[in-house]
Image 1 (tube, rainbow, N blue to C red):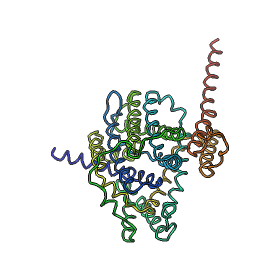
Image 2 (cartoon, one colour):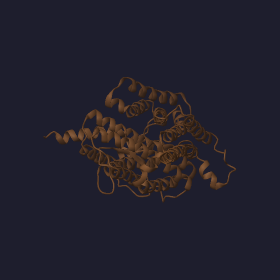
Image 3 (spheres, rainbow, N blue to C red):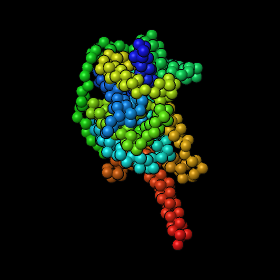
Image 4 (cartoon, rainbow, N blue to C red):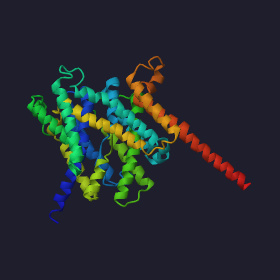
Length: 437
């Protein structure tokens, strides 16, 4: 009995480590891409870790209004990386947080009847959207592998050796490691790459020595949010894709925990996610969603108690209050980050393909939905001036590859699948009436 708290703490720490790489690398990528200073980047990493803990506790704590009440960890959604970089580059950092706040409020509002909207977001749509997001992220990874866009040593031998060495080490871990070590291979790869870079004189620890030991989160750290329609549309699409993914995680957990989920409990889960997104926007962090890697860890450990996840959430909050820990992650050199990004962004594309694997490929309509939406998404990203001569109010929907491609997928799914199924239902109904007569 004496060992019970130690057991809970060690299992909780395992959950923290399993999701830590994803929680840390998202702010590093986004912050680096939009040109944040070392101090700002330290804040972004620290506040993100803290908000992961708060978001997790909001979801595990079941009450009348929110919380799924299952042992689930929440972290910043990787699907938001590309959109946030695009919004930050075009509209500024304030528009990123304005769009996150509004998208979170939309999730809270639609939580009760989201199940009824799900037919507009089947795997053919969500899989295409995730693929588009992954494809738009690859150029960011390539630039970082070379040392970062505009760097004086762009494409140098040292940068390429470091980035490909990091990628190679991650792949070796995936090949030969098993279980928990394999699940944190990207985190280990980043540590390995940074250690090699340190011996090459490419690591600067000044941000760690300058960072304070304790800080409190500040609302609107990066300034007052601004609200632009295109960024709001983009982040709302990201939030809806996350809800669809979370639904799968909820049902997987309900199966593992042998617990039936009611519509009310599902709505509570969606609402908790929406609240976490709003808080992420207010404290200048990220949109939050369920982390599926922790579901795998739950299965491996066999421990399904919520106490472990509560403790993991408290660990994350404690880590987030110590900026020195956040600053330690900012010393990772850009090429090392780039090497890890290729694996992760490639996994986003691969995950999109996995989502599409449940699609009926014998249907020519589904093939056309995928072909046209991914084609438009990639095309607008590669040729951003394609719709430059259209009216400004139309460009809101066309000047972003993710929005353009996602809308194409949604519209084509309605035309080819939703309207078709409605016609089939009408036909069956009229035939039944005819037979009855």
